[in-house]
Length: 400
Ligand SMILES: *Cc1c(COP(=O)(O)O)cnc(C)c1O
Image (cartoon, rainbow, N blue to C red; front, top):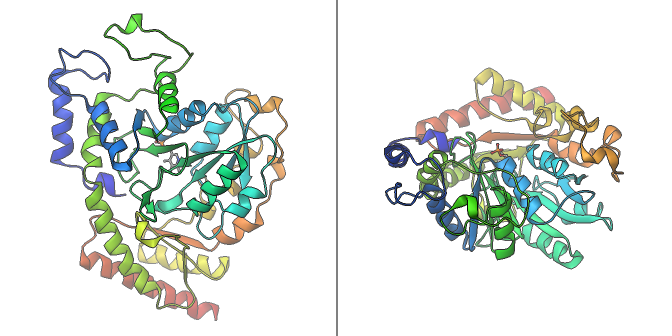
């Protein structure tokens, strides 16, 4: 994953700014911090990049999911539509909010579709938590229209698609609020960290209070600040924000490099009639973190991956992954958790224990994702293509 591939001088410099004063806390202490406000600066740059008014950093992408739901007033008994294919964090956040996750199929965009969302809307549907998977976008314009028509809140989980856009408009700006993650595996990493962005002052106000025990961040005496709501602590430290800030400034380079390499690989794949590329509604706006493609059946897919294993080529086969696809979430299907969840008192419209999603299975079982490395050289790219070529040849010969 690219962020950590580029860790260097810039990150060290931002960290040293903080270590020189020892002010690791993001608020107050103006006299001692020598002008360094890493969280505030990162928030300002992140908001400006998206052309929205507000960003608020958190401890993780997962807490940013929690925060987005809370700021939108989503809680006990509300239904939230989520995809079958997603890192599990947003689903956990819905459960922790006391709300009900309602699963909808993905299509060949690897994201929710208008028809899959429509199929599970009920009078209790409060929001769609749309996840832009593996660096690229859902049919975001049509989904945003649907939500508007139906009076449903749209939350974009853009944790995997920082820098991506649809028709020139950044992902994360189509919904009421969007979620980012800066964990160790994301394109921009802070070690651990996350953010929400929004153009809505009301959402931002509640989010910044909820994420800090209700603090209103007025004046210079924290203990004397008024508190309008009960909150929690999702505060990022200045050290993490410092790393994230340096990394974020490398985003334009990462995007350019990944896009160039990915387009060469896609051209290479287009020589194979047995391979279909992921449907990306706006290919120019792809953040190009993964090369995603479909084979013709699960059997051929597994044959190809056997070749990748033998060749030592890195890939993700999400269908078997325990954290990204509903099929393998037995803990969720039986609501196993550390303590009783509010959903135990509710009546979800879906029976999780027996839920079956053949539409998603059909797509996921044939999907291969190859991560794009930002530091690949031309020689590295040639090796990747050679390894693929050899795996394809073996697999396609065996299957025909
Ligand atoms: C990584 C990720 C998260 C959670 O981020 P953390 O910072 O690891 O908590 C949430 N949603 C999606 C789609 C992710 O990929």
